[in-house]
Image 1 (tube, rainbow, N blue to C red):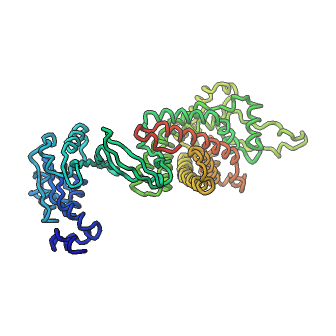
Image 2: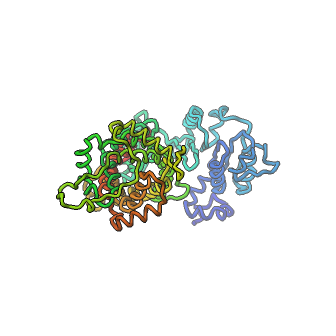
Image 3: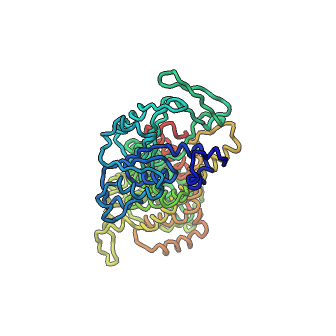
Length: 558
């Protein structure tokens, strides 16, 4: 450091501020030493700002606050204590008393006998910067901003105004506002080597804008968080989207259930054979047995998605890893939703099996083939009399009554809700595990597809919605392959009339299917889940974009 650079700084100042002088130079330190600040409202944010400015060596700080210290203030203010000298004293007085000890060279003044409404231009003109913290009355904030703009102070560079800052915090979120005036200069990270002009409100002044990168497009996000959504629009549209997809794909849901309960291939050879056989022998309407009950899942579906989005948003407290946040949100959402979803699932599964019988002869087999070769162990499901099978309402009523009045070991029927929650724990575990796999996989595949696009197709950009619709089926493929045996076991437990232990069911499945248990009903499940994921993600992501709050419009990539 040369002697002329420190000629206006004392030796003591040069030693005290040595590190920051090395960082930004002596001239900047001299300007800082001449700066006068007004800090309005004492809270955790303003105290931290005030402390840092005091240590930096400004000329003066006026702390403006006419409220008194309470016990609640002590917990969020490092300058306050529970002593009798602080409690019921003015916050501004306590703050100045403590911060003055950090740097005696800074003039600290407590202003406790005025309110914000009493601030006028005469008071403002004695400061260079005005900082307002956690104050949310817009008319007052706007008035202070206009007062600052009105103070045109002359320096060697021309005219300048009293600078106005406004800042606040909300838990993990915060904001800061700086009035840049009518005309300002900035650097953009968008467009190399070009420049243009902007004009002030009067059109008389102009400044150059310098660009630094190749594209003038603003950066867009592809992850829409829960706080960004207009809930009154998002929830109804989400329900409508889900209902539409469920309506289109319900036959695959019915066929999947039937394939999972049959022994080996005793009734159906596969997914397509099950669809055509069901439609041929039971009529096309049979493909929608239990459909209305199944759509009762829309209610737990809304609970699921709102819980998922909320938990994922707040999981920032636990981890910053997006995959872990998604896994936590998905598993918790499944546990909550299953309280309502399990009874609906059980009833709809029983209705899907109504009319499931063994044909006297397998299609394509000769009459000489022994019936023993196609013998089917009848699942001990609820029997629905033939005379009521044409009425979905009577079927529903019969199944609910049977589940409510289960036969006990003494052959007495007793009222109980346990029938509606058969296999609840394995069902909750299955869907929580599936969600914990599905959501992280979805975000993983989405990012990898974006990387592949950037690597091989950088000449053009695929719509993000298309990439997300590809990531959804890939996630379903992953989760279905890993959890299929559990899904088969869950279905078998829930549709049997008799209550049996999980281990007993699993042992029985192993004896019947051996390693085929890993692929039992898998084609139907994959067909359903992959196609379902494609359409549900299309609806889910589209609805999220349509439901964006106004301030986020244009900030999300399509």
